Length: 294
Image (tube, rainbow, N blue to C red; front, side):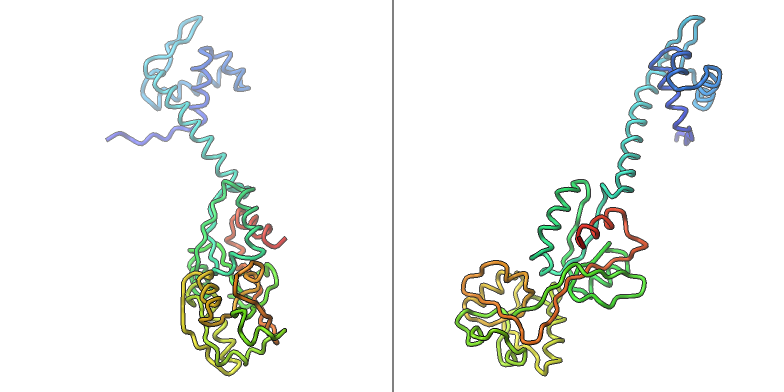
């Protein structure tokens, strides 16, 4: 088993300069130092390694076999070190890194989508990992530091050491078949939905836990007849007359054949927030937050 070597990287840089120049005077000039200290450093390196690296003649210097091997390895090590340090510097400037980002599914539509697309395009060395989770699960993961930030709706109250910033205003709308009687209304009272059948997304991946509470506060529990995974499936079922739903207004920006959207008589906010622990935020995350709130 070989012993651990604790050699200063600076000594390897001195060695490479002499090995490439094969002249102590020229190497010293290249390193902006005088020749005697350079010679001392090379002897120190040889002593630490227990082998000669140079054959010294009165007018010339040549590498030993050990010196040739070390030059190859030292060049590789220095290049690798430079690359690693450059990457760390990029991370420090927010130009590289990884962001674990929790989201509710509806956050991926609307105004956030083009802004996020621009951030990813402008920061190719920042890897954004999207984890679709309910607000409650996102908060639990944030507290365990398994997420860097979470995005969900109405995150106005969070633990004291977390920051909650509103990204933009939004509202929930009623999505219904175009032939539905309530489609004739300019604004729909929430109470008018008490006897309607609902098609929803799973609460674990959406805003439905929040919306169920809103309906219960209005005096009824929504009658959910279908629960599907994809929002486009929800809207497809609505277009077939299977039921209605409540969705963030970002979905109304697109054309869904057979589906109409109507605002509620009393607005239910669907404002989108980003939540994160400011003291633990990486430069890349701060850069993302600044992009999203512009």
